[in-house]
Amino acid sequence: MPTHEQDRHPGRPAFALEPALWTTLEQALAVVERDARATKVTGTLRLTIPDWDPDGPARVEFRGAFQGNGIEPAEGRDAQEALATVADAAQEVIVEMLWRAWPVCPVHDRGLRAELLGGVAVWRCSAAGAHQVARVGELPPEAA
Ligand SMILES: [Zn+2]
View 1 (cartoon, helix red, strand yellow):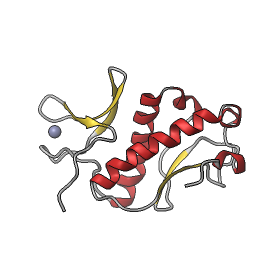
View 2 (cartoon, rainbow, N blue to C red; view 1 turned 90 degrees about the vertical axis):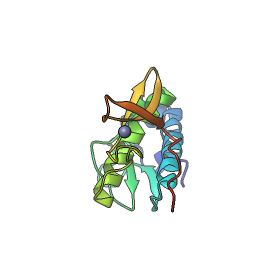
View 3 (cartoon, helix red, strand yellow; view 1 turned 45 degrees about the vertical axis):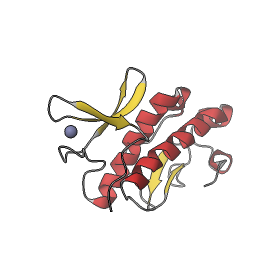
View 4 (spheres, rainbow, N blue to C red; view 1 turned 90 degrees about the horizontal axis):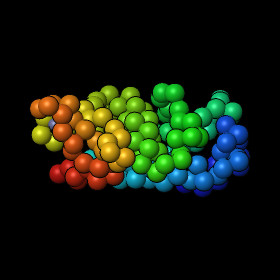
């Protein structure tokens, strides 16, 4: 995974001025990727600024595809906020590519939502009065 994507694709000026914002978002995606792998989702996930929107926000690419509005640099100011935002963006493109809900509550078989709860990024299920399934990056491994 290229770590200095912003050098080749400037994107929003903030990424060039504060490379740490990019790094935080990239690290957040690595954490979200753990959830993807734990739930048997395969295919390349990466943070990038696509050629077709060189001055745009960061985007999560999955299997070469994009979905959604992208991620503004400011989302990289807080690691947990970055995690919730990146999880949401990754979910959008993964769901689009897989044509099914992801990730899914192991109890209710319902699609989860990434939320910031008490300053911590978590996956929540809306069933049974809503409950927290796991912190982002800590989804239980799915059986084969
Ligand atoms: Zn549930």
